[in-house]
Length: 227
Image (cartoon, rainbow, N blue to C red; front, side, top):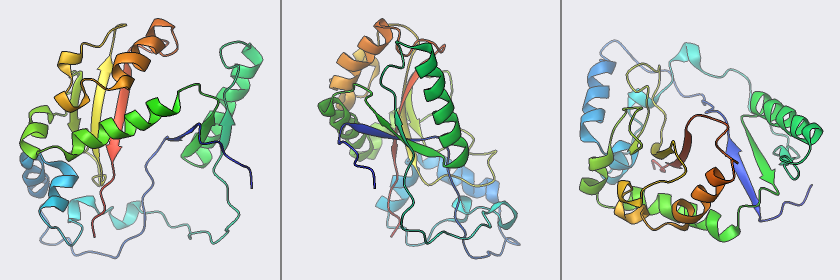
């Protein structure tokens, strides 16, 4: 098996569903339950903090939308690994990397990046910053709860909460940057002095590493255990 350096990043490009038992929907008012969940402004972690012991129906994928392929028992399956060294120096290398990312996204849904030049301490701080936000008191998080896509900073569980056939079991903290500077005052206090936002993010945009798209977004998930 290929050795993976600790200086690497695992990226997910899609959300995969899993099979669950059939449920009785005859008395199920999905829109009502979504509204009750939405009004708490507490997200998935709020459910867990209140002691939920059973996954609510809004998170269960309808039977006609579930994955039917059997789970593989192949123990030798390896996560796609993509080395992006030289991506900004050689057109042919860039093309090869883009193709590898496209293939991994289409066939796996996630992949591991090597030689991305993000320091280990910055990656650790990213995780710690997201954790600090999600683990702070609910009344402080609620101030940032939104599904308004025009907001630069906020958190929610799902942007498409009322449209998706099933709600994703996750909470998402996001920060959008549409210029070369992100005012720390717009961030939650627990994230305000993160080395990622103050040092790495401005450096990336200043060097045109990320500004090939109109808006650069940093997203941090928390996937909370339900049991």
